[in-house]
Image (cartoon, rainbow, N blue to C red; front, side, top):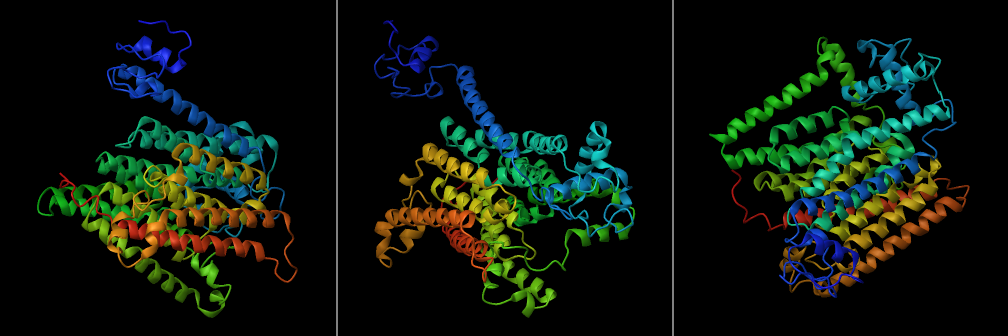
Length: 558
């Protein structure tokens, strides 16, 4: 074996582990099993345990970087900081701890002298209430003043902020981050390098970080549970996946955005197995699993029908209206021209939004039921959640996270479009972030995320029809649309124009005072631009789903 002086470090390490002799110049295995510059795990001559160690080392670095970013963001401001009398979501979460710890369960969702529902009344499902109780129990041990009934209202201090931030950090670390890691490692036909890159991009997605660790919420719990459900289904653990999704739905009712893809995929799987044999057995098992999961979550409320009805009224309030604030959906955008809330009654608004939402998600759901596949399932999660966000009733700007996390799951398949969508989704949150004084974290994490995606996936080089999963669609239009030949250049130009527009609006929103006659000019501009993007993305994802031919030759689900 020749001298190793002057060799690249990776090659020098590899030569001590590989039974073959590496070329000291190209760092190439002469057995032809690893090309020039290959990382350690790409040479099959290296023991698998060593390769696995290398992968986990890089994944550990990615997780530590993601945790560092989260903690840095958490040092900033939060929703409603120093803004009485209602404060914001930070106070809402603290108040729920106060209520769940001091009051009996039967009073958690009812308006009483000790529980004024007009002051951040509990309006999330039972698992959120149980989580609040656990946090309150720990808070009581540290400082009883944090959860004292009545007297703790609006409580703010640095120690309490540290405690609250830690609860979000721990929830993220226990639920969401492990699910992301295992999901990325489970990706098939993907190199180890791409798996680590995908995990890094998902974990650095700024939208979720800024809302949970900046604004202050626990979205990582429900989204993490939903991700665990996807992971289980990808391994054919359908019952465990059903339990995980039921837990997600019982933590936040907005997980209904993902419910139809789960239902259609599992129902389609039962059809494939045959409803007179294994399919019927699976359907019965799934139904039983869902019933038992819901019964367990709602057990303390199941003794009284009025209790259940009151919880449901709190979870689905009709009186709040079609949308809140300047959310980037179709109803808020149309309200610029037509004041829908003033023209149409709340009941009619509810019916109209339901009809439009149902029609918009119907094609993807039918396709998934008829041709169930994991790939189709993940794309349907995106499409259906985006339909809910754009057209459904009572939408918050933060609900875009329910679309963004499924998009993260396909970032390895369509990195260009996924990155673009995730940037737009973060931009759509700008008015809320400015309100919470989170401009600096937004200005740092968003460009950093773009840089990581550019470095990990070279997204600007992946704009062909094939890279964007549009090859089948382009072939169907061949001879009708001449500009498809220059499609990659057009898409890149649109992407750069989109970035420039979002950058300009971000600067104007942060630095320029709006006209006195139009105080909401910039928030509305952000909502309108984001909504236009989302409508085009909805069209794109539906085209990918409906023209997808990759799953037609799959083996029958056993």
